[in-house]
Length: 563
Image 1 (cartoon, rainbow, N blue to C red):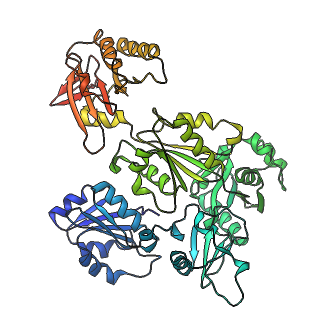
Image 2 (cartoon, rainbow, N blue to C red; image 1 turned 90 degrees about the vertical axis):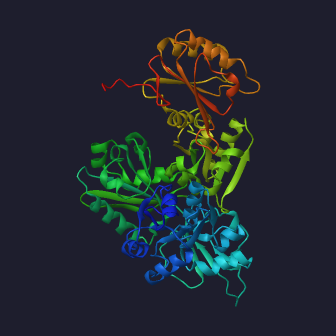
Image 3 (cartoon, one colour; image 1 turned 180 degrees about the horizontal axis):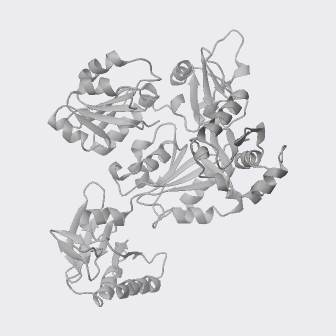
């Protein structure tokens, strides 16, 4: 897990400088008083001070590992990020890697599973761990036998496929047991419980239903059936209720269906009144079964209160999901939390090798990583979709934004095939090169602009050239991706000739190479003075409009506000 509410505390001026590089709330000064005063209301602390001092401050505050916040210590030179407290459960290990990625520090994680490269039970993607986890974890680390009770027949990760079935354990031998179940069970010594996301909660509500109305009904239905809330993976409803506050407040991912789709589902308790009201004889039961997919069963039939209905279905197999993730231009500081979460929670991470390296701090030993060479975009998309079709949670990683000259387009084209219809594709946006370059240059995109790739590998030059002509005629700021490579030398000079016919020789041009990465380089020049030899494949080129100016070394395209 990754902590949500994080507080950075520093005590020295050098430490203050380190803390200011982190995207968290920051308090500078009396560390002991700050930690004690905020201990109960934050998920994690990043303490920019010595580990020994931190230990003395937090020791009197410790209660138990289920409640204590995570603690990461960073020295005030920013060399090391040490996970001190709450490694897996509270998220200190993940936080140490996150802090290290932003500051350039080395993450120090001493948890045995991380040190040995063995997935921890409480970090397995697709499961929520509870019960007595430690004995089974130790046995897995030691290579000792572990019994598996998987009465659901749920697909297991590679870590557990070689374990002994629980019924096969010889009489008289006590082995740690791992039980895969969606039932709510009391804690048993020596038994770790893994809850898979087997359950889909179908709901229907009246317009005036409150969050409490629905939450109470859902909670009672889950508890009454002896099910575990940890195994709920989704809530399903009719499309008109997707954004209803009672549905949203449940906190699970939402899938919504149109009334005609729901009407096609056979349910045990159809209602003519519901049909007349919404166009389907069922909402809760039909939505639960439809979202749960082929082979699913209704484990909790429709239950109703005055304001809402609920039903619960059990999936027959995992539902695959593919996140096409934009990692941003390079550094972790420009990577969105949604992108980081999608990679961390994936069972399979697919990407061009350089992009996988870009998010290496997010990838753990529990994840299967598939690297592919540059130029194998269709193979990469196909591979990611097939893994998701097999029920896996997949992250296909891209630099920048996945929808701009990247993988979202081929993935969604291929996902239209009938055999991939069950795969849910989620596009996670990222900071694209044009935005990263513009930030370095100033504000060149402050008014209308166009983005064009000068690569003619997939688009004929006749088409590319015509688009440059149109941008020139429209007096738009032009952003050029893929402007030049060893094999493509003439396209950039030709594009500049086209623009120069419509713009003054003094029009500003900005070059940013490796935007957002270590070693970012930039320069300002003009259409007349641009040297193509300064441009590489990783350069983003921004050519101003006739209104673009340079102010104090920054490139600005005025929006037109009266000053």
